[in-house]
Length: 473
Ligand code: DGJ
Image (tube, rainbow, N blue to C red; front, top):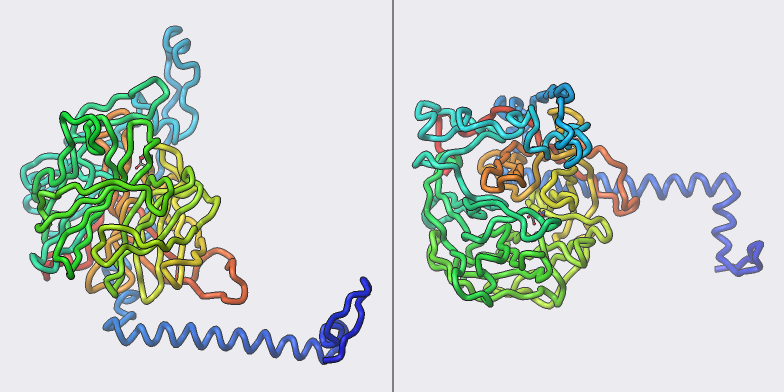
């Protein structure tokens, strides 16, 4: 190729100067861009249509009347209460009255607290609504198990057990007093253990008990009650036939920052605690595990002081991480990761890092689980502006695919109540993958056309398969 000199007297290919000025160059350039675009469109079409064959009918999703119902945009109109008359002593103790809805949410004496934490009169569940064959979810209301007790499975996740054909919901059993170890320390409940509930319809939950219990006496044990056990997730290993639980294990000040592993032969435990570790030699706080269709499982965790998420595959027995790890969402300070997959694309919902206070969720997408991951934006739809910017006053924990309804998922989140952590609420809401993403794309030339991820706010909703026609499991 002939070389020419540019104005800095550096040699460069002649084509670049040709491209800069001649009209031929414009034609050439637009042909190249057009070709890239067409190739991309074809690939994207091929990708979607090859998947279309795998799921029975993707049209089912958009034309299913109940899915339409889930996509209904429901507004919320919460008004700030009038300012309260406060005594001089109260003003001295806490000089400012809440001025924003988030401050009201965090104020345990707020006059509108019942809107965020409705009382037991509005609780729902099989003992309270035995005639509710539609199995309506009431996000934020107290959810009762089959014995009429509030479900204790915070920061949890769900395993569908192919052997028993039952769903198992594992989470933090927090039914103890909330306190602070020191004035500025985070609110905490001593470890009690991991609660487990079983169900065949995702609405009627039977308490299977604490399947991994705190250590009461040995203060050196990871699970001594004075420590922290959060976000337990269970996956099944079909090779070893073990149920494997991964969890965030920490000390009361969150400086140990480790993951713990436990196993059981049965989904209902008892789980045997194996060990804790710093995965890949790094600190690890909020985490989740994700099992892919090919049975490869991955650990995702907030690391490097919560500034980055790390992701890496687990060993074949799921008991450890392999020495392979990618840093994703670098410098974005995300936590509470929840991964799911739809039509060969991986999606993740994360939260920001604001302790127990709610913040804005983000959806992310990737063609490979190891990345690169691209941020799509806030998935929340409905409610109002504050609802959407606080994930409906909650934080992601897990996303569960709805069998039989491609593209439809249950978004599971925790509405933390730092004044009384045991009274934290569950927000289960429909999550739909479909429609164009509403953010400019970051990778301009590999530009995959992600679908939009939407989590719809509803005061009341039900699963498409509920209503007596057929059970989900
Ligand atoms: C946010 C995390 O997502 C929770 O699991 C918990 O660790 C709180 N921080 C503690 O402040």
